[in-house]
Amino acid sequence: MIRIFSHYVSKMAFVLLLLELIMLLSCASVASAIWVSDENGHFRSDNLYVSSLAFALVIIFSMSALGMYQHGAREGMRTTLFRIMPSFALGFALLSALIAVRPEMYFGRGVSSAIFALGATGVVLTRLLVFKSAESALLEARLIFIGGGSMARECMDLASSKLGLHQFKVIGCVPVAGEDNRVPESCLLPMGESLLQMAQKYEVSEIVVTLRNRRGSAFPIEQLLECALGGVRVIDAATFFEREACQIRLDSLQPSYLIFGGGFDQSFIRASSKRLFDLVAGGCISILTLPVLLLAAAAIALEDGGPVFYQQERVGRHGRIFKVVKLRSMRRNAEEAGLPTWASANDPRITRVGRVLRKLRVDELPQMFNVIKGDMSFVGPRPERAYFVNQLIARVPYYNVRHGIKPGVTGLAQVRYQYGASIEDAIEKLQYDLYYVKNNSLFLDLLILIDTVQVVLLGKGSR
Image (cartoon, rainbow, N blue to C red):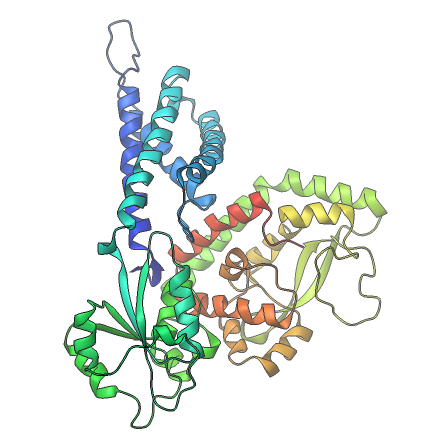
């Protein structure tokens, strides 16, 4: 993994994106070589490079928006083909909209067909090459875990689940006296030699310390130092989860990790750039989605004649209470008992129109008012109701850390996890929120917005 503006990105996924960008630019250039603009047979060069770059960037965006650079499992060519088709269809729609505004960027029907055909073929071949290369044992990260308890088991499960472009080979676990064993006996490594000798013997690239208790003579501090000096990278479980899962796990978290671990950028430049981005994005989306908002409002009013909008108190930055504005998706008096209630799957309180609005996330559009006003940001932890926040702060450690920045319309937890409807779900989402609060940047915001497109188009995680 590599870090780009504090965010961890798979090296192979980054290489794949660069290769496909170059390949798509090449396809556009080759296909446009047959683009003749006058009777003398001269090739028109004005706007050629701009049009080729626009084609490549739009296709890359479309593939990113549909999750083609998120590889949780190995993909066969059939799966790759099925994912490429809707990505190129989305790219075609976006390019058509762009050409409607800038007609001079149009290649022509024949050239456009050739570009799309060459581009799709190039993507398939590029992915075939990269996927086969990623399967090579030379690119595997070989790991040894220090400890054999529950945290070691969780780290092993995470490493085993990374079957895509970033693969691991778990050599085994080194047991430590006084820790209950939670891993299979076959995974335990004998301690007949030093950690450095063991790492060199198995060609280990990284040692992950999974022990919660790092005090006492059982903790091999001197041997770990020897490994670090010997060129073997040593990290703890919290860093491993942060890097590989984009989570700051509560069960592996120590206060010192948050205090001394870096991140938490609250500088003037970061705050100013985020606010400018919020104003521009919020204003543009408000204007572009106004017709959709008006249609949704009319449908709500026609269904039961009730109010179109509703306001609800939420907890914002530093615990400040504000009122979020949304389109009403539940029946009137949905909480007649007076107590706030988590939304559930197939919640009977949701109206027929509301179910569609939630599926497409249209009910969230009025929150652009909160973004422009400054109560919310476009990207950040989702704001919760004070009733639930008070419960979660009392039961979940570090929950209040998520209130260190403004809440958002969308966020990392929203694009990586299902709809939260319980305290257990809130804990899982908090681990993504903590990662975002620690590593937030404009680059990460853009990645989350691209992932949000996939969530909206596929209706993921809605209730």
